Image 1 (cartoon, rainbow, N blue to C red):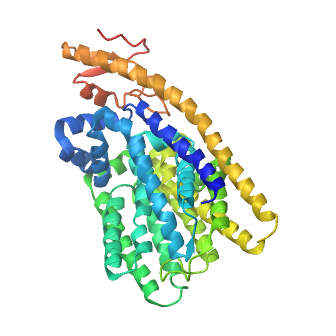
Image 2: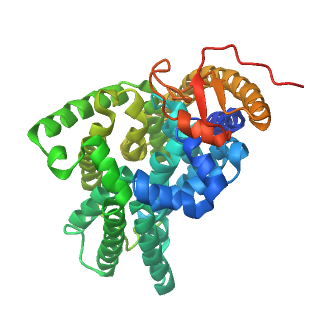
Image 3: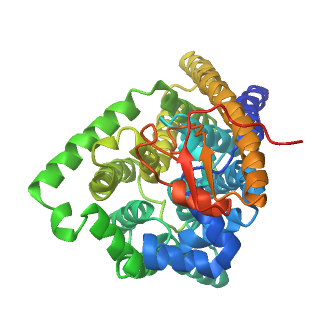
Amino acid sequence: MPLWAAVLAVFPLALLAASFWIGGLVRPGGDDWCFLPVLRDEGVSGMIGKFYLHDNGRIANALMVALYGAGGVAGHQWYAAVSGLLILAVLWALIPAALHSAGRTAPRGVPLLVASMTAAVFFFATPNTYKTFYWPASSVSHTVAPALAAAAVIPLLRARSRRGRILALCAATVAGLFIGTLSEGTSIVTGVLLCTVLLLSLRSRPGPGRARTRLWCGVALAALVAGLVVIYTSPGSRHRRDRFGTGATSVVDTGSLADALRTFGDILGTVLTTWTYLGALAVGVLLGLLLRESGPAADGPLRSRPLLPALAVVAAFLVSGYLCTLVTLPAFEHNMMTYGTRTWNDYLLLLVLLLAGLGALLGSALRTRARGTAAVPLVTGAAAVLCAAVCVGLFVPLTSLAHDMDVRAGHWDRQDRWLRQKAAGGADVLPYVPASVGQMRDPFGNHGRSAWPAPCTARYYHLERITYSTGPVPAPAR
């Protein structure tokens, strides 16, 4: 690994390390108020029943919530570090696997640079980092879910034996069922990508590699559809559709299609004018400049010419992003550009990886055509500076968010101790002073006019009711 690349990797890794430390300031809010009492009183089975029978039908989502919610407040505080390391590990494993399948290799340590940079851009370039990265209830279904889908591809890219191919098919089955019952948005993106790969296989050379890729995609797609059927037929999903009016007819009517197109255009306008996403493109250019041939491309899904797959992934991103917007828009009405930004992450990981891939193609082409000229070191330096600048640009708003989270954590802790003391003393109705961060409802919204999720908060503290108050927060007895 070149010395300059090792130094550059410090920037995204330091940014991620700081973000993990800041995660200790997270406190429950929003949907968490409703999850924690159920887990405490009814356990994992109660959480599954809540999701399947009443909320949305997402069984895998319920299991994920139970996984971090079992730790109570501590589970929320550790969530960012654990999920961040998981996603970083997935990207770190995915990049060399994809390069190996394409017959390329990169110097040792470079995949970590690319993985950490793309993870940092994915987590912190979004309009609402708190809901993307720190709020577990959002992250499990819109941030971790696409990373788990990406992880399922690694066994396919690494399979070189009959046992490896069987393992890849098992991973496709499990991942398809899990993603299908975890996140409708990620399922849409995954399904569109699987269909894209199947279409691309029509132009690839006949052989066992093409047949194995088709089989894997078919198995993954079938498992994904099965998971979506479980969600769609659940009582919780029917209740959600009735509540938001998102029946099949209402989603595909002319007005909804046009509204979704306009909204997705607005989302693209926001994302494509956010300069920090250039960090993914820049680190991809660096990767392309450092790539070397490792022999013929493996007999797998990435052995075709790169331009056509790149264009196909661009089309898949646009189609899946529009479909996700179409499906989620009714639930957020006119708030898709504010409260609904967390749902963008279902397809933003694909965008970040796409930018890195396009950058790698540009860097590889430059290395081949401008070898020995001043263009290569000039572009290398510019891309490295851009990566560092993006990390600094992402760190500045992160420090502001950390301050807001610190203030809320102190507020939350004082009020938590006071409420517990009063509830233990026999109180039934107590005032609650909200303290919001990241556009969260905690637990009242719209200056007290919206009571959600106040009933859940009251249950959490074993109270009959909490009332809206503007403060100050009462001091707990010593």
